[in-house]
Image (cartoon, rainbow over all chains, first blue to last red; front, side, top):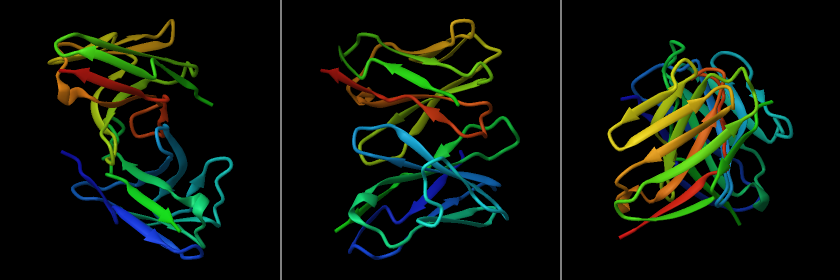
Amino acid sequence: GAVVSQHPSRVICKSGTSVKIECRSLDFQATTMFWYRQFPKKSLMLMATSNEGSKATYEQGVEKDKFLINHASLTLSTLTVTSAHPEDSSFYICSASPGGGNQPQHFGDGTRLSIL
Amino acid sequence: GENVEQHPSTLSVQEGDSAVIKCTYSDSASNYFPWYKQELGKGPQLIIDIRSNVGEKKDQRIAVTLNKTAKHFSLHITETQPEDSAVYFCAASRGSARQLTFGSGTQLTVLP
C-alpha cells in the first residue's frame, strides 16, 4: 500500500531555531502534498497545500514566511518552521495521494515539535 | 468553505457492542468522505471511505453510510474490541486527492 514517511518524528529545540520537517512518499509520486497541524486532543487543521514545482498555497491565517514549504521533487515536500517560538510547538502531519483522481490520502506519522 | 461537525466527542462501549459516530457536512459539492483512526502519537490511518455515488459501504466489522440529501454520514463498528480504542476522525472533500476538512474527532474507548 501507499506509504508516507515523515522525518524527524520528534524535535526539541531552543526558541529562535529553524526546524525542517521532511515528508516523503515512498512508493508513489505525489504532485500534491498537504501539511496539517494538530494541537493536543484537537482535530487536524490544514496549513498549506504543497505543489511540486510551484509555490505552496497557504490557508488563511498561516504565515507563509514562518512556515516555508518546498516541494522540489515528486516524492519529497519539506516544511521549515523558521525562527520557531514556543507557540509553534505542535504536532505537524503531512499527507499525500498517489493521484489519478481516485486514490485516498495517506498520512505520515507526524512530527512532534517542542520549542523550549 | 466546508464545515464538518462530528458527534459524539467521546464514546465508551462494552467489548462486543456496536459503536456509531456521526458527521454532517455543509458543502454540497463534497463527494468524498473518508474515516481515519488515529492512535496516540501517530498519524491518521484510513479505515474506510465512501464516495457520493454510493449509499453504504462495508468492510468486515466497519461500515459507513451516506445520506447526501441530509448531508450526513456515519461510521458503524460492530463487535468492538479493545484494540478499536482510538480517536476517529471523519472528513470531507471534493475529491480524494483534494484537501480534506476534518471533523473534531471522537475518542472511542472499548471497555473489556
